[in-house]
Image (tube, rainbow, N blue to C red; front, top):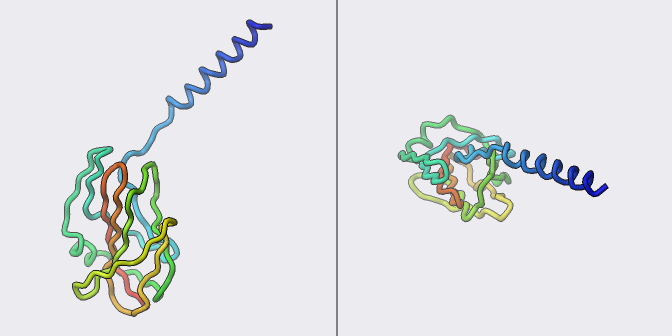
Length: 143
């Protein structure tokens, strides 16, 4: 009986370890969308140390080039990452209008509200994580 118990325990351990070894993790920077409004943001400046991705660009110019998305004034949104195999150290959301940056409050659930004032805005999301930094931008019209 002892031999059978040891054999079963050994077989179970091998199967358990095989599952861990066979897993693949995605260490690339995530894509970002703003839920509720379904705005997909473009990758701007990236320094993702985990996989070596580095990208530098004029973020506001890139934001202007994005297709405008319509959102509602004061609408609640969430920053949504397509994958999150990293720890968020800091997450900020801001909008730009006429060269002025307006910081939006982001809670621990990655939730924020668009401005109440109608108009055209460039949106910027800055992420600092244990894997590196990433910036995402978009172009919105608040109605």
